[in-house]
Structures are given as structure tokens and as C-alpha cells.
Length: 141
Image 1: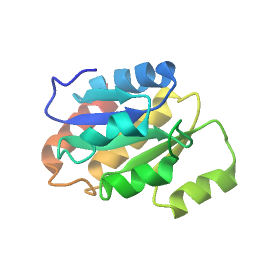
Image 2: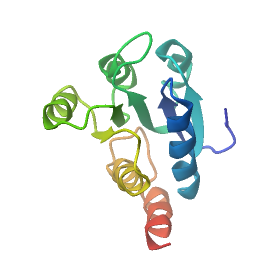
Image 3: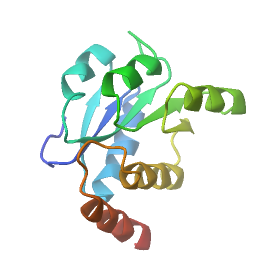
Image 4: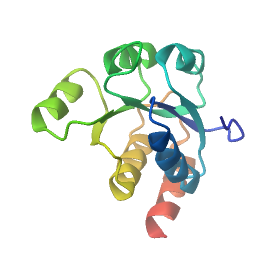
């Protein structure tokens, strides 16, 4: 677990490969990462203003993504799913997800979604100028 950066993302997935891929992308944005396998482990981090985006599997060992959305309230939640189907995507958005990624996560798509989530302004007390400049640097690279 990395807790160095003041701004972080939270990745909740039992799949370590998801942790590594998303953590690498977050680093390019200057964000730290907290990775957990279960909701119960991640819950202690969810109330933090430092968490800017949450990535979580659609089905975790102890809950599903709806519990994560309810717990974080205004922080954007990106659902990771093994299903690349339109119905699952629409259901996740209806239930409050910010976006949906079919796994394994594609780097370009994950970057685009992370950038959009950071710039959305849905986060608690986000400094938009700082986030936008970080995102612009990554996109320009």
C-alpha cells in the first residue's frame, strides 16, 4: 500500500493485476494509490478527502459495487467488470457509477476515465486547477 501522495485513488479488487495496472496509471497523474481486496479493508479509507477516485470490481468477496457507491457518496466510482456488455454498463451508471471498465483494464481507456473523474468536480473539495494541470501533463505526454 502506498500512502505517500496527498491525493490518492482507492482500488478495491481481489485481482492484484488490476491493482498494478491502475496504480501505474495513477502514478502518471501524480496520485498515490491505496489497494485493497475487500470492501471491509477499504472502508477505513473511504471517508478521506484525499481519495479522489475509487476503482472497484463489480462483485467483491464481501459486497458489490453498490455498497461502495453508497459508502463514498460524492467520490467518483469506476466499476471494473469481467462483462463487456452494454446492459451491465448501463446498470452500473444507473446505480451511480461514474464509469465502467471491462477487464482487464486498458491503459488508454483507464487514463481517459481517470482524467474525466478528476476533472468532473464531483470530488469533495478538489482543487480543479491542480488536477487539470496534472491531467493535461499526462495527456500531453
